[in-house]
Image 1: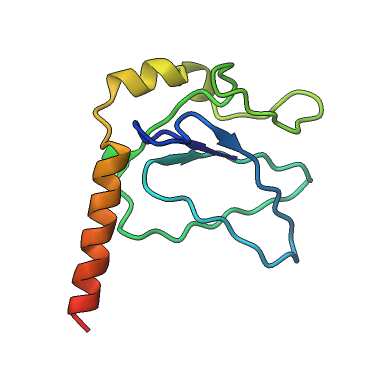
Image 2: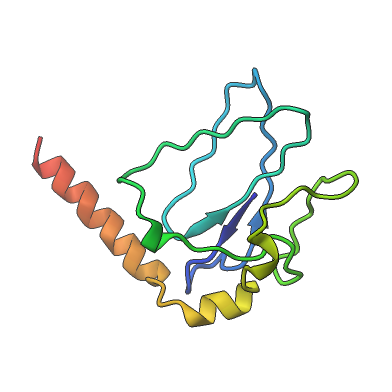
Length: 122
């Protein structure tokens, strides 16, 4: 699942579910400012990340995946097995108001500048 947390985005707060399965040869692009989570519905699951820059824990942002504000329609049968940190994660609205996020417009400008610099460097 992905949730747009880019302040000012037309899709701000909207949740989208993407179903992935082994052998489908599909992936999901999660842009900067969009949160993600996952639910493994089989006995075995794997998740691999391809990052645009080295991981930096200072930029990690967590919200409670069961927050009613984002209303994720998790496809969980029985009791969810979650990280011990899950109950302590902030609600979506509290987390977003406490963090100094880059706005949707600022992120768009940064993306276009980076694309222009890459084009000029060729």
